[in-house]
Image (cartoon, rainbow, N blue to C red; front, top):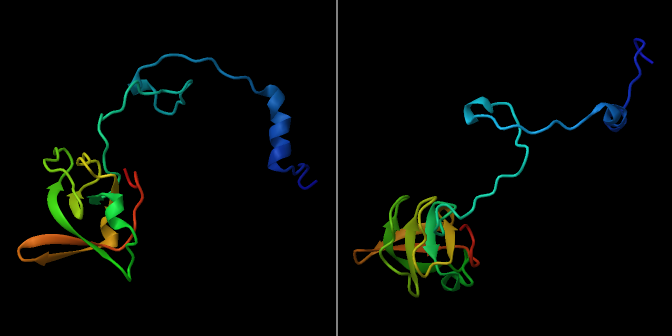
Amino acid sequence: MRFQREIVDIWDAQKRLEPWIRPLGTEKVKLTDSIGRYLGENVVATHDFPHFRRSMMDGFAVRSTDTKGASDERPVTLQVIESIPCGAVPTKKLTANTATRIMTGAMMPEGADSVVLIELTEQMEKNGQTYTVVKKETTPNENI
């Protein structure tokens, strides 16, 4: 014992305190009075909000089948047909070898099943058309 104190590890200290701990009851308080408090029960949404599939990242909404085999050595080039900022509704459906520029939180366009991170792509122009070069294969529901 050092300084007349017994040194114990954390697990032993918790065991010693257990007999003195009692769960508190729950109470309803205004949200403004809840700072520093903990929820007494889980809160679960009754429905998805927003009600649509959305991008978790800035990047390109794609059909995962179009990225099959994509890598740094074998990139896949997709035609960019639209750009969807957050809050906008897509107007074009993705078809084979197309992509849509999409921002975090934006609604996924019809036909898209994954999002390629913008950092894993390069952009290029050809004959007045924009393309994205994808350097990573994606899987369905990736980054959605």
